[in-house]
Length: 98
Image (cartoon, rainbow, N blue to C red; front, side, top):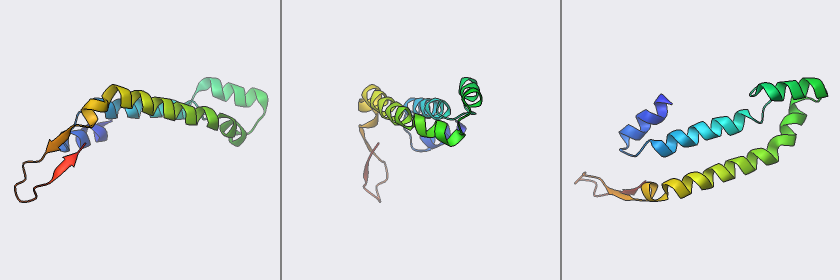
């Protein structure tokens, strides 16, 4: 989390979209592994399937979760992230898009 804040500050961009993306991706990723969620561990132990089989079974849900999360964040922060910012570097004269 501190890394995201540091990079956002260095690039003078809002940190909210990036922190939400980090939090939601951690949550989505942990829900698809046997050790990321206690309920998943119980399912794996009680069912007798391997961790690989469990993960393979949840790959479709993982992909849907990633896509839905990305779409929600893009809808929420599209205007903030698509604003062109002019750098005050007279020697470079570069316009960067964030």
